[in-house]
Image (cartoon, rainbow, N blue to C red; front, side, top):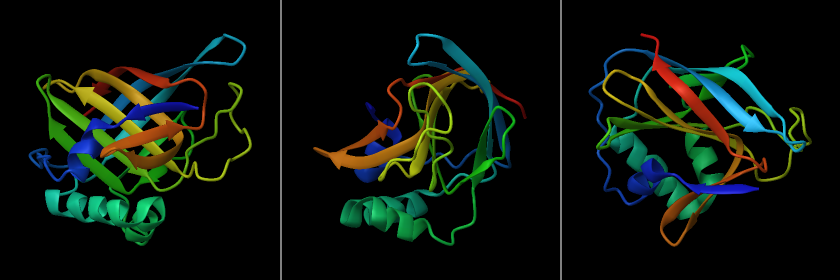
Length: 187
């Protein structure tokens, strides 16, 4: 299992972040997901990321507070019934609704974090359709884009989330990190 710290969530959890909110309207990004299989082969797939609405700092703060007070179960409860703010689809598959969208200014542009309250796919031993494992019931996507909307990032299609020493940690179900390359804003 792969672990990484999500900077956008770290900021939101510390309530130090600034949600830009300057991006009006729907944004669509395309990217290429790349992962190495257990056998050493490299597999790629197209990814489409749609954000219909960025959450406000207040909304993000409420979700962060729910998470810090009660962990993933409290976050899931806080997200229940909230309308999707976007979607992520891999390989032209059915889009997975995203319930949390954060954006933060960086020295290179913007860091965008999307969280789905369900896994997109469990990649185990390099194969889709691996058996789900308890606790890996979110999906987390982080991309950093420049002013033109170009960039790169990572995707954890089945993730466990937790806080460790004040940092938000994403633990991916898969052994290898899925990299997102060639990120481009479509519109």
